[in-house]
Structures are given as C-alpha cells and as structure tokens.
Amino acid sequence: MYLFSNISKKNNEEKRPKIFYGWWIVVVSLLGITVKIGSFNRNFTIYVVPIRQELGIGVSAIAFADMLGRLTAGIFAPLIGYFVDKLGYRNMLIFGGIASGLGFILLAFVHSYVMFCVVLVGLISFGVRAGFHTAAIPAINAWFKKHRGLAMAIISTGNGIGGAFAPLVAWMVLSLGWRRSSFVTGVFVIMFMVSTSWIVKQSPESMGLNPDGISEPLNDDNSTDNNVTDYDFTVKQAMHTLAYWQLVWAVGLRNSVTAGINFLMAPVMIWYLQGSGREETESLIIASIFMMFFSMISLFLNPLIGWVGDRWHKEKVSSLCMLLGGVSIFMLLDRSGALWQLAVFALMLAVADAANPLAWAMLGDYFGRENFATLQGWQHLPNQLMSMSTPVWMGLIFDNTGSYYWALIPCAVIYICSSLSYWTLKKPKMPLNNNLIRI
Image 1: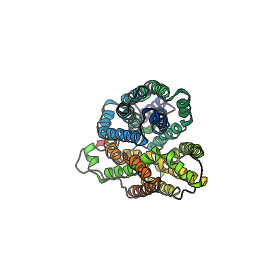
Image 2: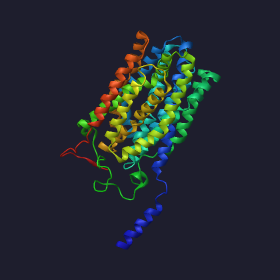
Image 3: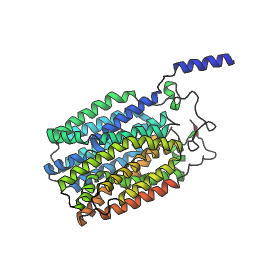
C-alpha cells in the first residue's frame, strides 16, 4: 500500500503544472482592473472639463451623475453578487466589459445631460461595477487561501498602473477630442475583456487542483493563519455575525473618504498649492505629477501590504493604514503649498489605499469561498450608500466657502473611525448546530 501511495503521489506531482494556474487568473485580473481604472475610476476626471464645456453643465451635475451610478450599483449589488456566484466569474467579467465598453462608445454620441446620465449610470458605471473587481475578487478568493492576501494585493496594483495612464488619456482627449477618445476606449475595453476573460476558470477543483496549488488541502491543523476558516458559511449564517457587519462598516467608512478624495484629488491639490500664491496652471501641472506619484507608489505598496497582511493580522494592518490615511489629510490643512507636505500626503494616502484588498481577503478568510460573491454584493449596497454623496457634499462646501478645509476635516475623522473599526474586528465563531459546508 505504501508503494502504491508513493507512486500515486509522484504521478500527481508530475501532472501538476510548474506554475499554479491561479497565478494566470491573477495576471488576467490585474490587466482587467488596469483597464477599468485607466479608463474610468482614476482617469475619467480628464473628460470632465470638455464634457462640461460642450454640454453646458456644471461639475456638480457630473458629480451627481456619478452619485446616481453608485446608488444604482449599490441597489443591484446583492443581485450582481448572486449572479457572479451562479453564472460564473468569466461570464460576469465579459458582461462588465461589454456593458462598460458599449457605454464609452455611446458616450461619444450624447448631446444632452439626460442622455449623459443614462449612458454613464446605465452602462459605464453599471458595467464597471458588475464586472472587473466584482468578478475578479471572488475568482481570486476561490483560487487562493494561504496566499489570498498577496494575490488580491497583486491584482490591486492595477489601480496604480491604470492611474499611470493619465498622460495617455489626456493626450487622446486633447489630440482626438473627447468623443473619439471615448469611442476608441469603448472598442478597446470590449475587445480586451472578451479576449482575455476565457482564461478565468471557476475553481481549482474544476481542474483537479487545490487552492494555492498545494498537494493536500489545508485544514485547521496545518493552516498557517488562524483567521482563515476551513468552512463555508451560508449567506444567512454570515449575515447573522457581528464580524460581517463590522467589516461592512469599516470598509464603508474607508470608501466614504476614498470616493470624495479620488474624485476631487486634483482640485484639492490645486487648492493646497494655490495657498502659497501659485497660479492655477502651475498648480495643475504640479498636481498631475503628484497624482502620478500616488499611482506609481501603489504599485509597490499593494503587494507589500498584502504580503504583510498574510503574515500578520490583517485587521491590525488595515487599522494602521487607515490611521495613516487620516494623518495624511492633516498635511494639507495649512495650505502652505510645500511640496514635501504634498509628497507625504500622497505617500500616506497611497498606504491607506493599498489596504483595501485586505478587506476582501478578510471576507474570504472569515466566511469561506462558496458564497463569497453574494456576501460581497450585500456588502457593496451599504458601502455605496455611505460613499455616494461624499464628492457632492465636498463640492458643495467648496462652492459655498471657497475652501476644502471643512470638507477635509470630516474625511480625517472618518478615516480614524474606520481605523478603530478594523482594530476591534474579530473572526466570527462557527455557528453551532448548523449545516456548514466543508471547503
């Protein structure tokens, strides 16, 4: 028996690929998120000025359309999460790519604010939030367990890579015009997502593999992380735990700040730089450089924070990162215009931004793989409701006071509250006398 066991184990090792297939899914997810961030999240702000001028609308009107997009995504998030679990990651990645790409194509033909809202909310925003991160993160959660934090951190470097394409997007808008630029972007998004998403498989078990590519599945005795559950909670069981809602609260607080700071990062930096007497044009150029710095530093911080999170408590790492995010806000309040303060702000804010994947990893660590996307979808609903108004009220404060001072103070406080929520977060206990699904 011992001989046959050794022969079987040797044959399994020979069949196992040298590179775990899950890492190919990481690569595809990374590229997809880069496309998403580069075309919409970080760089759509470049379209704001020409769209505002041509359609004759204000910045607040565009921010309101973005808020509607977040609201719509939040309302449909639980249903989208359910579809991700039931229809598969690959199908939802393709759907998200086609919907958002079609939205960019149709954006090139809008001539009214109403149609702008329909296209932005119904196609671009909805497609972006129905695919990409929403499908990629559950896929990573299914394929990894021991290295879950690192894998999710790696795909999140797409935030930095995508943001670094700001000069290219600006060049396209200036040279081609915003309409042609939007059309080209839409065609590219559709072609790229449809052609690459086929690589994504539903689970390692579907290919005769185990999570992380290990020869034997991890169990409670040999797991290296005491916070990684060896069972799948049902949706009902997970939503009856304090840990789930505390995680939702902590992430929602963080996203409330991120929604406003990311959307208004350039205006906030310009406001700070003009405090030293700089002209608006000079301030805009300097702000774009530091926005590039913020994106590029994320390339290094995302995998570093993920690596640390896999080796220490993800809750404590996240808490410390949120605390740095709060401190970063205070660097801008004196409006000194000092470049070293702006650099520290960008660096600390990038650290806070890099901790986001740890929240996804904690959701998987706490509640397992089977219902991850559905639980993530229900998490998105309150998150979007908490964050969707931040750009609007920050803009209103500036419109009425001519300053971002009293808009930034609440952001710092919210970051600190998020830090406290992460620090006190505890792994949920296994429900007694309930049917849990063994991973």
